[in-house]
Length: 271
Ligand SMILES: [Zn+2]
Image (cartoon, rainbow, N blue to C red):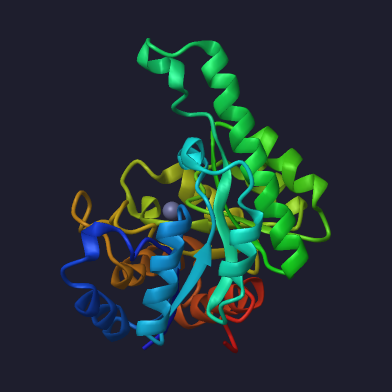
C-alpha cells in the first residue's frame, strides 16, 4: 500500500472531539502515516501540540490565522517562540493574508475598519515570518484574495523562510509565481470536485517536487464524501485523483509528496 501524509489538518477542532482516536486510527489504516495539525491561535496551537504528544503520527504547526487577528495581542513573537520549541512542532502558521471577508461587508463597519484589519493581518503575518526565520522553520500560508501582498511579504524573507500555499486554488501562472519565490503549493479535496478542473490543470503543470497533499479537514471532504466531515484518511481519495491527473503511479506520488513534506517541515522526518 502506498503511504501519504496529511500536511494540513485541524484535528483540534471540536468536530473531532468525540472520536479523535478513531480518526487517527482510520488514517493509519488508510496508509496516512503522518498528520500535521495546524494551529489557528495560541489555544489551538497548544491543543495541536497536545495531540502530537498523544499520537506518534501527529505533528503540530503553531501560529495565528489571518482571519483571527483581531483577537491577537500586538506582539505574538515571544509566546510563538516558546511554543515552537516543542520537538514535534514542524512549522509556523497558519498565517498569511485574507481579504475575502472584510469587516465592512456587514454594512456596519467602515472602510477604516477594513484598513485596521488588514494592517493587523500584515503585522501578525510579519511577526510569524520573523520567528520562522529565526528558528529555521517554514510557514504554512493561508491566502485569499491577497496574493500580491502575500507574495510581497514572502519576497522580503526570501532565502530565509519558505511557505506552503495551502489549499491552493490558483491557476498555472499563480502557481509559477509561488514556486518562483522558493515556496510550495498543496492541494486539497477540491481536486476531486466536478468543478475543480482549473485546479487539476494547475496540479498537472506543477513540478513533481513542488507540491504536497492535504485535507484541510474538517473542511473540504473529497468526492465521494463531499459535504460530510472531512478527515485525514481521505488523503487516499485525493491521492487517487492526483495520480490520475499527473499520469503517475501511486508509488511515485507517495515518494515525491512525502519526500517534499519531509524536507519542507523541519523535524517531520526525525522528530
Ligand atoms: Zn487550515
